[in-house]
Length: 307
Image (cartoon, rainbow, N blue to C red; front, side):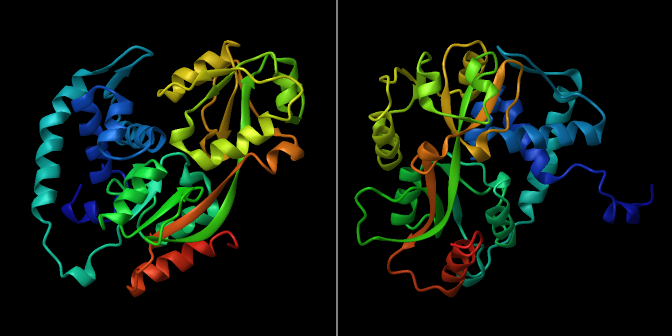
């Protein structure tokens, strides 16, 4: 292949793929690697799969218990490190006004699956970017307050908003119920929580997201049977595995309901519950923000879904 052909070839590894590979190689854990480079697991896994497809080699052995490097994976580490280091060496400092917009995204949602928002994030150079932090909404607000981020997309407003922040509504994200496919309620197109009262709900602590928690609890209080709760696990894949074996149910944002395995299904909530159990997405910037680029990004995202 002539050197000039590299310029137009799509069949070569990208720097993002190599960064993702090195993160997993160092951590030997997709979850820890995703946290290390501030991504969610699905896009990280896709980057690794694309890299393996491009190279035509399997780089990792992965099962439910551990992750290990294949022979090809071990031999790639030094080469990948050299490439990433050389690319990083090309980085130059630019004037403050020319710096890239610093955007953070809540890890509660998968914005890749939210078409309107995803399109606008791509225009802003943020969607699925290794440099884009995926944090909790509370952590994102702290970053905005400390001026380490210019703008963030969060799930629900701060329950005690201060003069520090300015919110703009973006869209409403539906929440689905995750249940065992063998449960009788799985035969319905829309499921009520009353239909699955025999199973416990994997649930989170109120401190994680007070406003969404309270919205849901109001619905729970009106159910015919009190809902039983199990502490939500940090590993979402492990939780979904438990559900597939009939051990419980969960409520999950529609954009995150992308993992499928035998014994697991996703259903919409009945309308009377769905209109309350949902996630309102907002952009948040500092209240004293005056920079045109940040205000443009806020307006662009707020109009992405008719907000």
